[in-house]
Image (cartoon, rainbow, N blue to C red; front, side, top):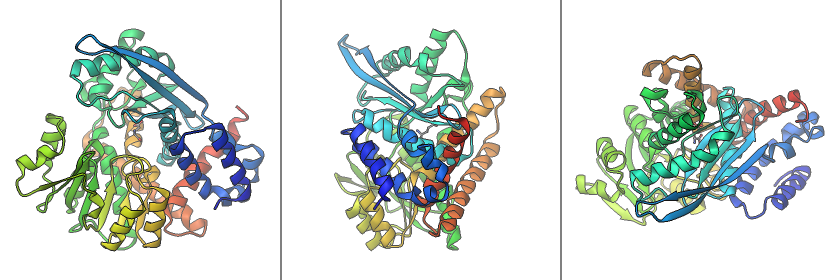
Length: 446
Ligand code: GLU
């Protein structure tokens, strides 16, 4: 239930943004936490901070025409939602996936505001992408698409304006093609305009690993409060992309036993533990589906259309996509004795799923906090670009570790201060919100 005043604001959000269910869900979750903050700080109400925060500063929608290898013409839609720049230039990834719509980009951009605030780095929130489907496309096709996308986007972005990065469907390869086109059009080698770059052209060590590693560091902090460790525990990680692969890597480094991972076709169960070199070979080198994994690992089984959350586990990391962990899945996790869930993806748990996990006493690290390591390390990449410097892996990983434990500390302390110890959702939402709200008040009515 929302406070009465917030209820009216939420109704207005629904009215102004029809048919954007994911955006509504993301807004509702934040509004569900900030009631006590408004009571404490009446200036936020007077300044209509909530209404302003729910309205993007700028939304860009554009046509992306491109030609496939047969010469056929395709038209996709490109988006960049510049949501909030109170704390710094808009910052957030680009997602290329057929499911992307304006509502998707708005939900992601909205989450990004509070996530970026929690990192403590000077970055605002934004997100972009396209309904382009890179699956089955040749390198040349994806390159042509990226070039066409940037031919419009370049005029809206920049080191001091808006700094995109990757997300689902956008990795170093795509960032390279977009950076190349940006450089060509502008005739400027502006490294600080995009993050997630390759090492030899302005990229930073640890950026590829950062989201997955960060989620595991956050999990480690949550377990530590309860006097527990990752060592020896069974783990299940959904997804098989960049976030999942690096979450698996860090879990294994810390002694976790990762039994399963998944893609859109089903999940792999490997009783001997997921073999990382095999997974990387299949996903990163061959760019194949997970079914290929079991060809290399006869002891493993592929469960076509199977539900990964049926695999009994002490630790669950949803690292695939939004709303992948619903109430029935949460019930399976609770029944199988799951201790902790840390969200590597953005909003992978449904509100009903979250209720079940809460009722089951499962530790829960929300994406805003748990997956903030990626964007935090993007901000470290920006720092290195600005200083024309490059840091070592060990130094950067140590910084990432410090940032994740500071995020954990902020969430835990805020939850405690608002009378809900251990509620990381409330802690993340309030701590993330207050910093942005204060900056908005300070900057005046803009
Ligand atoms: N897409 C990532 C996220 O959801 C990273 C964004 C970035 O590095 O700017 O936070």
